[in-house]
Image (cartoon, rainbow, N blue to C red):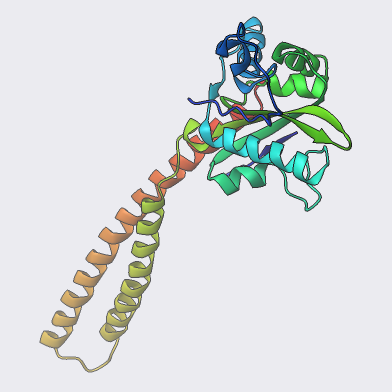
Length: 256
């Protein structure tokens, strides 16, 4: 599943049952579960490397979102991109504070034996393969765990793919606020200019009074015109950034 919005630690999650260890068994032999996030991360990037694509970097917020999804799958006993309450991976990304341009998700459930077997299964599925080999994404978060699902013990693995907003040039909120403030000031100045222009049209004015009013009008008009030029320059700068942002987003999300 992929959703698009238009404007390096790996957490391993596993539910353990009792592990007995003979005196001849080393700690290293039981420290890692058969399937783990690090292994899924490795084989995912192996596939991208084979395809000539940039490798994905691990993101802790995406990892957190993937872990929340995996835990929810077991807790509420469902297997779908949308939870029973309608929550999807983009909602989880929002919850953990991951700001994104595009986001996607792969799910796997079964009695897999290795991390490679999980990735191989995804690669055999066109939709999952598309996510793994997408040029859109630059980051990933992975969670893997084993627990009971509908009366049997299975592995549940989640990949959360993302393209962060930092991948494209952002618009400047401070510039947007400054434009709004200047625009408000311009509206007030325009009222003053109109009032001073109307004052020139009064009949019976003496020359000295008329000349004083002309000077007052000219000063108001000069300030207004200078402010308008500054406003237009700010708007042009903001619009240029918007065009750059939209071009970047379009290029990234339509990449094949």
